Length: 137
Image (cartoon, rainbow, N blue to C red):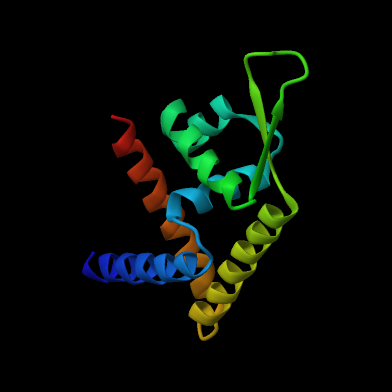
């Protein structure tokens, strides 16, 4: 468990440093990542995906819109809803995040055999499932 905590701390520090260089926080990057999965989405859908309040998502979007990462537009059928999508700059940021993640994975696991990597992925998935169940209580 101590090795897992060490890896978690090192990954968090590395991620924070990389995001700061891009003018992002972890939560803002998560929002960009979620928008990369499906867009446009309503602010309510984003709040649910990020597990934050609607007010919090509004604040996050204000900051990302000011930096040119996202765009908001009126919903075509629900005048109370706002749709959010990535701007070209936001899409470029999402692509950089994905590329950086793949580059880091390649560095971290370059000396690991395919069988060991497959076993690691099964263990990590099982641990994530158990943690999700614990957090759902």
